[in-house]
Amino acid sequence: MDPILILLILFVTALVLFATEWLPVDVTALGLLSALLLLGLLTPKEAFAGFGSDTVLTLASLFILTRVLLRAGVIEWVGVSVARRSRNATATLRSLLGTVAGVSAFTSNTATTAVFLPVVAGMARRAGIPASRALMPLAFASILGGTITVIGTSTNLVVSGALPAAGQEPLGFFELAWVGVPVAALGLAYLFFVAPRLLPARDAQLEESLRAYLADLTVAAGSPLAGQTLRETGLGRDHGLTVVAVRRGEQPTQYAPGPDFRVQEGDTLTVEGPTERILAGKSTLGVVSKSEQKLPQDEAGAVRLVEAVVMPGSPLLGRTLREARFRERYGASVLALHRRARNVERLGRLRIQVGDVLMVQGGAERIDSLGEHLVVMGDLTERQRDLRRAPLALLLFGGAVLLGGLGVVPLAVAVVVAVALSLIFRLITPEEAYGSVEWPVIILVACMLAFGTAFEDSGAARALTGALSGVLEPLGPYGLLGALFLVTVLLTQPMSNQAAALVMLPLAIGTAKALGYDPRPFIIGITVAASNSFITPLEPSCMLVYGPGRYSFMDFVRVGAGLTAVTFVAALLIIPRVWPF
Image (cartoon, rainbow, N blue to C red; front, side, top):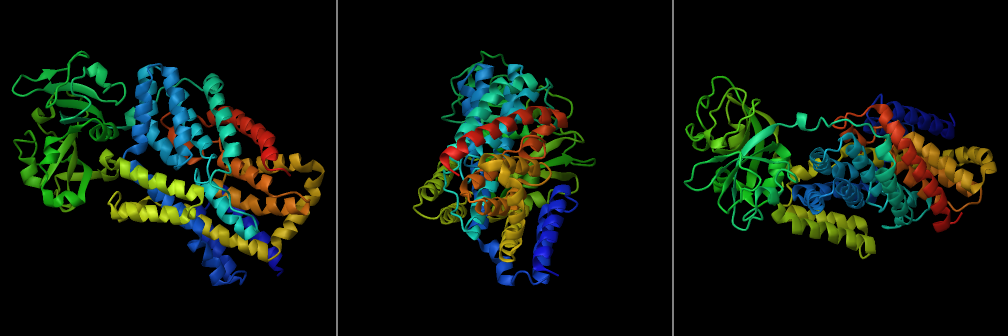
């Protein structure tokens, strides 16, 4: 059979599988690569070259560096800082969305959405704004920011990495900014002034899915809380924590202190809030858990944080943690406790009941040997933030971006070195680093790069683009750019953004060459189109807010269609002026 026909059959088959997701996209990609090898359309060297490409190494390294920033609490600190600066609800929301777009230009938009989600939801709740009018704009703002730099989304990197094989220059670090910044600005304006009129008014379900814990936290020396009233600390407004009791030296415990209560160094605050808020507060507010400080020092390098539920028959039942000698018995400490019935009581005075969920911290071996009466429900270790490491994490990430962006060293070299230094300085463990890489994306990219090689070498690309050029030639360059943009947008709805871009890229380049146009504007158009997926909630950032915002599928269609139209018109007006046909 003609190799070109075989390639086209494989191309259509992969397209259908990507769109329907009968198989996971990475499995489809591996199947496609296997078929190319078995049919002799690629040599093993050509087939596996993508796994060692600069693009794959850069992608994997950026996944790890984003996790480093998250572990250091950098992104969350930025969000809380923005929220604290403004007291006007509308202005605060707009500032947060602008910040999200800016942060997303340099980190994964999915990770950015995940970190800012509780911040935005909490701000909306305290300001009386329906969560549904804040969370979808959050997801869309993170997507808009991803079009500004080549590392803004994995799609941008994938396109850049595939260009040399097609005889084109890779994307410059800030090359997309010429169109990405105006598109992001217009998109944010749409989210500020138009989207609120289209979005439904529904309360969030976010808090219902989070356990409310009680924790005893002591105000340490140098804490920003010392000397401030509870109102001034913003513990409730900005950090989502409710102070239910305060213990000061030998004085009687003060329950439900008022907003004018002034915090002093050494006070122990019993606070109530979700897991993420308590962990974030511990890293940003200068408060410590006494029990945490008393952990055995020899276990400090392998500390885990888990949720454990108290089972019937536990020796803890009916006792306080001190009476049960929890730390001596288990070699671990309890940082917080969750109970279905709300308690306005200090953690130290609560008597353990069946079903209580304890937030337990201790050495890995100790956690593994908690016993049958304390069942571990989930591992929270990766949710901990350590702001002491934030300056170093920022230095490594910023240095890699600066050196790679200025071309001092190749971007792949800069980010790989930054990952190595992060591991050396223990900003992240090797296990966390490997776990932070989105392996399905890596597999998809590597396999599709190999498919692109076969598609080009076999002549299938020339045959297909030759047929397309005859159909599209009457549209002219603007019509061709618009058609490719719209087709790419449509493809990103049922399939991954990366797959859509890799499918459209060779077609756009081949068609442009056949019609005598410079391929660059069409490459940029496809990149922008593939990165801006708003019409359905299938984009990962959108899926994160879909449930908490209580959205329907048609909510995304109604709001996303208008934002897609804004992006489409802006791209059509800007791209040809920066990259002439």
